[in-house]
Image 1: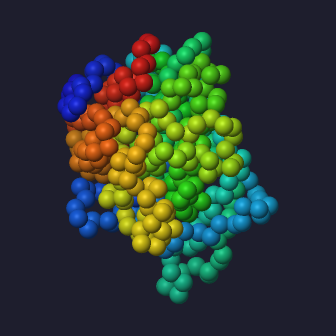
Image 2: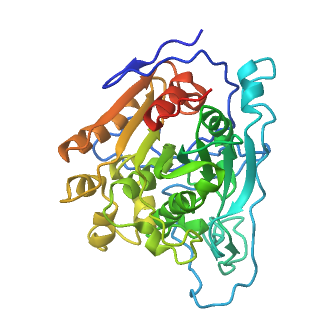
Image 3: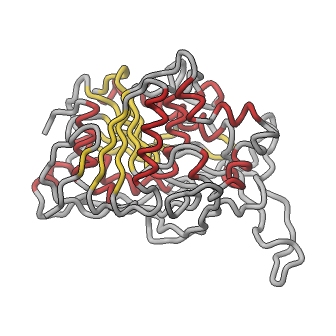
Length: 388
C-alpha cells in the first residue's frame, strides 16, 4: 500500500491507482544532494533512455557550447530523433484503470517547429590526451522539435497540459513521460509531451532552450481545440531539470516564443496559465556554474542581461510579473531534487506575492514520484480534470 503524501500548503486527494514504473531519467545537470553555499557542481550521470540504450549526459564538465551555423545557412541535412517506444499498458494489464488509460488516443512525433539547429558536440577528450580522437570540427545538424498528443475521443473544453522532461538529454527522450501523460489525459485533459533543446551540445542555451519550451506551450494552445482542449487553460508540467526553463517561461513577462522564429504555433501565447514542478530544479543555485555559463553564454558579470532574464528571483519580484497557479511536488527520498529545492522556490515565489502549494510525496525518489498517485492527483486537481 502506497503511503499517503505529506501536504505542505494543500493536501492532495489520494487515488487508489496501481502504476507501472515509467521509463525515467537520472538528470545530469542537477546537483545530487542538497546544495550548500558554493556547491555548484553537476554530476555526469548516464540515464537509461527509451529503448534500453544509454547515453552519457554531460553536465558542467562540458568544455564549451558548440559553434552554431549562421541562421541563413542552408541546412545540410534534416535529422529526426527516433521516436521513443510507447509502453503498451502504462500501469499493468490486470488493472481496469490501465485498460481505460490504454484507450487514450496517442499521436507521436508531431513537429512543432520548422528545422532548427541541433548541433553535435566535438570530442570531449582534450586534444593531445592519451587515446584522444583526431580533432574534427563540430558538425551542425538540423531537426524538427517534436511532441506527442494524448486525448480521449469526444472531449470538449478540456484543460490542456504540456509536459517537458528533465535533462540535459538528447531529443527524443520525452517518452518516459508517456505513462503519466496517458493517465492525466484519461482523467479528462488534452496532454502533450514535448522535446526541447536542453543543452548547448544539442543547439540549446539562451534563449533557445526557453524559446523551445514556450513554443511547445504556444503550439499546444493553438492546436488543442482540435482534440477537445480549451486553449485558455494550458498548464506546463516540468520534471527535474525541466523546472529551470519551465519556471522561467512561466514567470517571465516576456514571451520567449518570440525567440523561436521556426515555431509553428502562429500568434498563440507561449506563457502557461499554470505551472507544476515534479521533483524539479529551480534557480541557479541547483545547477552547475560551468554549465550555466555555457547555457547563458558567459558568467553573470559577462552577460548580466542573460542572467537577469532567467533568474527566478528577479522574475518573481519584477513589477507586473505573471501570477500563474503553481503546484510543486517533492519526494521525501529524492536526492537529486531534495525537499528544500521546492521549499526554497515556494519561498521565492511568496516574496513576489505568488502562492504555491508544496506537496511532499512520502517515500518517492526522483523517478518513482512520476508514478505515485499523489502526482496524478495534484496535477488533475490543479487543472480541474474531473473525468473518469
